[in-house]
Image (cartoon, rainbow, N blue to C red; front, side, top):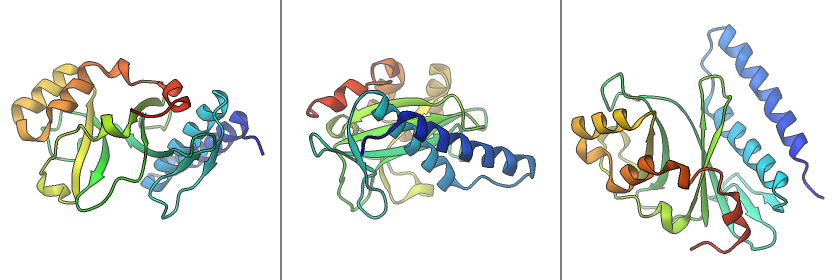
Length: 195
């Protein structure tokens, strides 16, 4: 069965409507919904780009398998946040790349950045090797995270974060923040073998 980009977008719109209703009720939006919206939109993009796939999810350690290559995609989604690890005026999107004491089971990592209404998604596509270039971090609040990516709202905020917490922002993260356009919407790399 071929996947329809429009059907995935339709499912995303239904969840977005639920998020709007929860927000109107002053209810906290479950992070599960944020992640699911990211997966739906990535699947829509894959279908739109003619990339055949199978949905995995669950306990597989990755979310999507590419039919033609057998390569695995992990989708991570984030809202703009602070999480109390930098001064309050520093906002970023944050994605876990690798947990401590666990193996990476994906070949590609797609990081989805949403605004607070789960709209205006931006997609950053990394090969496994690129993602694992992230230096190891030790943030007391996130003891289980070995590698992560914080994509700051602006380079000024990144510089301020580096000034405040230099060990929290790795050299690789600084590189990605400075050259984010290189990683955005790189769907074409999913049609080839990762490097």
